[in-house]
Amino acid sequence: MPEANLIDELSWRGLIHQQTDEAGLAKLLASGPQTVYIGFDPTADSLHVGGLMQLMMLRRFQKAGHRPIALVGGATGMIGDPSGKSEERNLLSAEQLQANVDGVAQQMRRFLDFEGDQAALLLNNFQWMQGYSYLEFLRDVGKSFPVGAMMGKESVRSRLDSEAGLSYTEFSYMLLQAYDFVHLCKEHGCKIQAGGSDQWGNITAGIDLGRRMLGEQLFGLTAPLLTTSDGRKMGKTERGAVWLDPARTSPYAFYQYWVNVADADVMRCIAYLTEIEKAEYDELASQTESDPGRRAAQKRLAQWMTEFCHGDDGLESAMKATQIFFGGEIGDATDQQLSEIFADVPSSELERSALGGEGLWIVEALQNAGLAGSSSEARRAIKDGGVYVNNERISDMNLKLTEPDLASETVIVLRKGKRKYGLLRFPK
RNA sequence: GGGGGUUUGCCCGAGUGGUUAAAGGGGGCGGACUGUAAAUCCGCUGGCUAUGCCUACACAGGUUCGAAUCCUGUAGCCCCCA
Image (cartoon, rainbow, N blue to C red; front, top):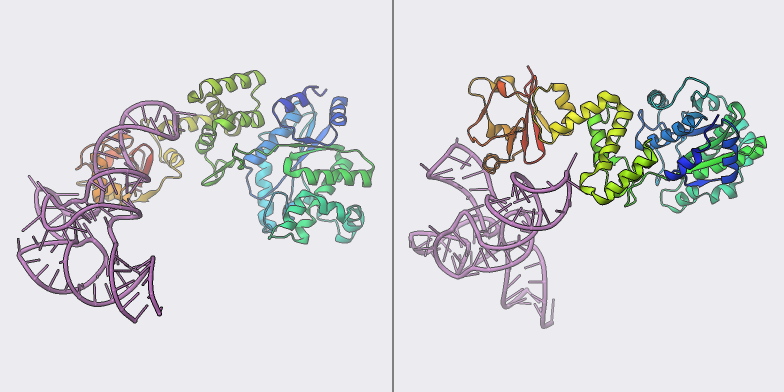
């Protein structure tokens, strides 16, 4: 039996941005297990933070006793959702799209339970759209879409007013998503669609279509977008999006991203993205208030997220990497660990033989690693006490690096200043 | 077209014949402190085969034992007259 407090839960977490029929939805949810769907855009072969938020939403529904459907937009992804986009989107190739759908589907298995009574369903709208002929679609679906109403949608209007304009293809996107809802209702009894607040227009379009085609009353629920206090989308770094795929964003980088969330944003992240309970949430909120320097909330967020998305091992390696990156002893690292920690650090490759004989002069090494632009600069840095080999400060201007200085099989870690690193690789 | 002024290091800005690689500030870089923050404080801030050498004050040439500093020419910028 569904838990009655799902709405309360979503509500204290601030996850309810808009609902089509508050009372109706509450009544529906209380009446028995429901099916909810959220669509995911297969724009890449991995989810990022935005998608995670939606996934958590489905997870919350599932935990409350409902059945989630994660709909991967194999068909809609071919068109491109204009909502919230300022420009016409580039179309993806069919192969790329398939690879993306597979990648995203794989990741979802971690967050949703695909077994049991309320087993989650993973569907791809390409399955029902691919055979749908254009003519039939226009007769069945297009007929129910007054252009006037479509023109009124925010997503369409903003694009029409902009310079970029809007192609017919993107204009039609809404019909496809609307039809998905109808299809899922018909085939799977799905009466609720959730999504980010940018999906409001698409969701209500689906509700309208459901009323016309099926005579069904469908419901919609949107969550706020995850933005920073200064209004930018979360989950972006200078180096690009924060991905769930450890190959794209290492657990360490992932952990770091959350640790660095601004005080003003951290509680919102915890509310939106984690399953940390209200009591602890309140506790963390008051700690952030009274002792922001400790950043208890950030650390808890990072810890929770990393463990949840990358498991115990991921968390452990993130912690170790953090310790090393912030100047801790390097000890017995492996090439693998070091290249993960220093993924964004410039590295250069030198002949192994440079370490033989006399060894490699530190002044040269710093230049090789890109940490000094000239030998004068390198000497100066050493004199200033700002040079570290494998995180140990050095002071000898004439130091020569030899094999024993390797931190791992083939890498020496040089550092200038607090955390400006440069790697030297000496492949065997 | 004529007259006057100006041009300095990453940026701004002193310097007007001799410790001037060039005051001061900004920036940058180190260090201390700190919340993997901000502020603050301290040091460094042309290059090199480095206790010395080389290149630098728009560019080229000249005067001088010696010039960023004086002279001539060229270029850029600014102002005034036509």
